Length: 98
View 1 (spheres, helix red, strand yellow):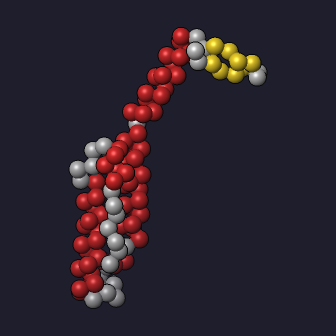
View 2 (view 1 turned 90 degrees about the vertical axis):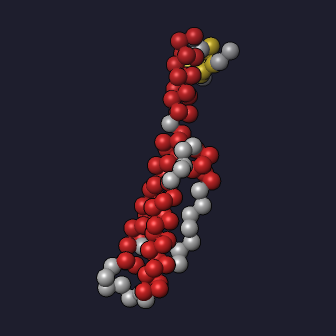
View 3 (view 1 turned 90 degrees about the horizontal axis):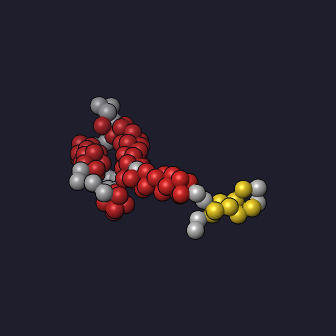
């Protein structure tokens, strides 16, 4: 039996309350991938934004350095390809900055 506390007193949940709790738990679990991929994209976007200066025309980098940064940035853009489960999101390894 599932319980809840009401004013410090243990009360048995009704069937309707149990069903509601299960529906809420199922909805939370169903959204796990969406939350995980959103977090991955947020980190990726932050890394891209922090490296924008490397691809500007007046960047002080050599052509070789710019190429390395371009490859890094492309790796970041590609990081979500094939990521279709929460486990795959957790397994993502971000590329190293040049």
